[in-house]
Structures are given as C-alpha cells and as structure tokens.
Image (cartoon, rainbow, N blue to C red):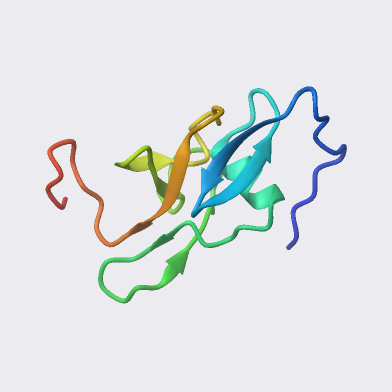
Length: 104
C-alpha cells in the first residue's frame, strides 16, 4: 500500500535527514518511519539469519520490525523516534546490538 502525505511538506516547515545517503524531508514532530514511508522507503532492516527485508508493521513500538541505525547507533525504533534535522539514518543489518555493540 503506498503512503502519501495529505499535504506536501512546506519548505518553511521542512527539515531533512539522510537515509542511505538520500535526503528525506520531514515535518516537525514526524517520526522517522512516517517520513521514510512517505518517501517510498519500505525496507528498514534485514534479519540476521535469512537476510529477509523488514519494515514497519505495527507503527506503535511493539513489533521491532522498523529498527534502524541512527547516527551510528543500533536499535532505534523508527516508528517511535522523532525525526531531527541532520540525523544520519541507515538500515539495520543483522542482529540487534546492545549499547556496548554486542549482539543480543
């Protein structure tokens, strides 16, 4: 199902972050998942065993299918993380990692 904003992002309101070296516009208060889905991104992470592509499912922080790396740190739920200008967001590949970098 395609996701589409009801109103385009106004240039005066817009911020942007980078996802895989691609600028993604967002509105104030919008989550990373909301901005990425509106930009057509569906693949947020890959599973550690099979490498299957995953993306947001519940959009309320329960399923953990939307995990992304933000500014070099794993395990950010894109549906619960408010977008901020200048963030560097990447797909999370492989297992979730704890704060020390160890696989969980």
